[in-house]
Length: 117
Image 1 (cartoon, rainbow, N blue to C red):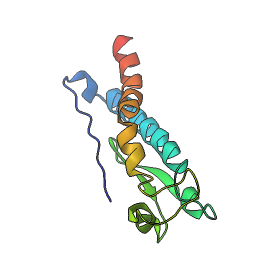
Image 2 (cartoon, rainbow, N blue to C red; image 1 turned 135 degrees about the vertical axis):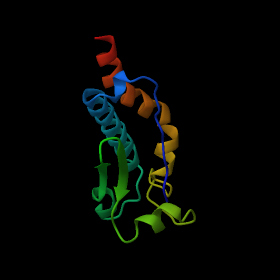
Image 3 (cartoon, rainbow, N blue to C red; image 1 turned 120 degrees about the vertical axis):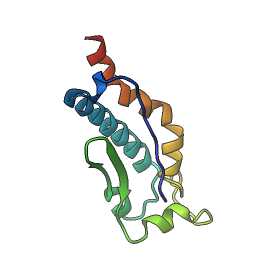
Image 4 (tube, rainbow, N blue to C red; image 1 turned 90 degrees about the vertical axis):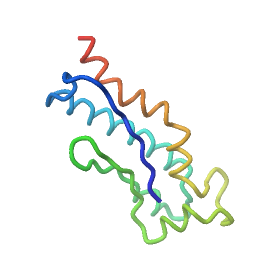
């Protein structure tokens, strides 16, 4: 299961090394925020799946959230499976959708401060 969120901008000022670095920092903060929301609802038995959650930055302006167990995808997709109260399938998809606005704000904060300064 792959989900993407895109951020695009206009202007050469942002394409400087500092602009790319700040955009990357904002993206990483946004992904960490969403990972935290996801870990709060990930199916839990022994905590292995929850502990496997990571944010990986791929290059300068790409990142991903991964849960690295052999059963992570199956736990995510099997809607009929029973989970502890507050835990659920779609543990990554739901936060990605629900936290979209918060993620965009977190990505914008470092750039906004720099552009205003």
